[in-house]
Amino acid sequence: MSAPLPPNAMPLAAVIGDPIAHSRSPRLHGHWLARYGINGHYIPLKIAPQDFAEALHMLPRMGFAGANVTIPHKEAALALADHATPLAKRIGAANTLSFTENGIEADNTDAYGFTQNILSQQPDWQPKTVAVIGAGGASRAVLAALLDLGATDIRLSNRSPQRALDLAAEFGPAIRAVAWDERSTALADCDTLVNATSLGMQGHPALELDLSDLPATAVVNDLVYAPLETPLLAQARARGNPCVDGLGMLLYQAAAGFERWFVHKPEVDETLRRAVLAS
Image (cartoon, rainbow, N blue to C red):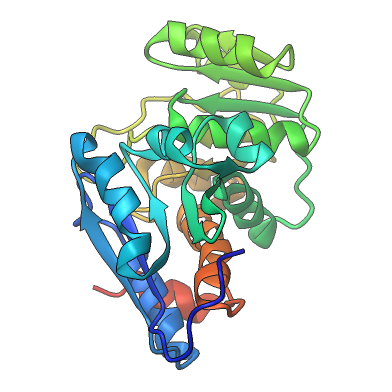
């Protein structure tokens, strides 16, 4: 928990990244601040990697209660923290920082956001056999969440095969690295498919994936939320698969930080989704 604010202090929080102009987090937290009548601010900060450590240690002195951290700073944030949750250490990255009287406390709420997003739309979801595309930072949180949910067969495919092999070795025998050119055939018998890459995002090429071997009952989740309906989701929806977009992961992962910094538990609902998606 963050240290109590001094009387009459205005709570401040930020999202730190490079780039950061695309982030929807200020709109998200701004909606909650207005909704609950909290006289605080949540601002985007574009900070280059070489300046990150110095800037991070300045924020508590400037009155900030905490910060979200996004690309490319998540691993550095964990390394710079004075304390970290076991989950953040396990994932190897932090996305939520609290500045307390005990120093910088690091957490990773991406795994929670991933899980709650799917369960909010598919409440009976129980992943056992899962295909995960991508072996970057987002994938680490997804793998941790899937293992905690009881998945026993996770097929991990990445364009750079060594990264998939490294993650499989790190996270344990339930994860099997699959060659990139075998990613489509690896979908056979899966109950869940997750795209944890940037493929399909605005300005990026689509994820090329043949869904012919994927069972029609399998849940398909794309972590990309811009656009909300990615080519992968459109393809999966057309064949009848239950689909979950990536926006909810952003919303749910943000809730824990907001509660710590602004001392109010926020709601994740359709009103929030509409506010974050508004142009």
